[in-house]
Image (cartoon, rainbow, N blue to C red):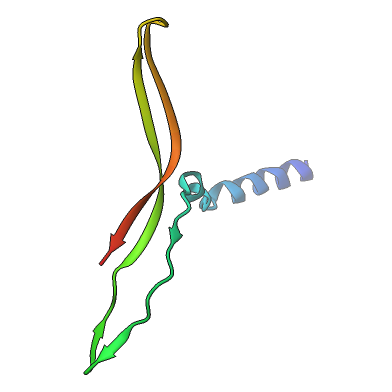
Length: 84
């Protein structure tokens, strides 16, 4: 009986905890190019644009009448984005 009570208490404690691993299911790595130094000209800060490469997929599709439909292929790629 004591073990059953401890088991119920244990289950209730861990079911009340927030789940912090939800964001890991949609994790997408981002490769960032090296940043340029911030230069100061007469107390005005000038920052150059930053180039970021984000993973994406390129989709190829073509009609294949012999097999009766479309053939779709994908390949991984990187999309270049400039942040000003």
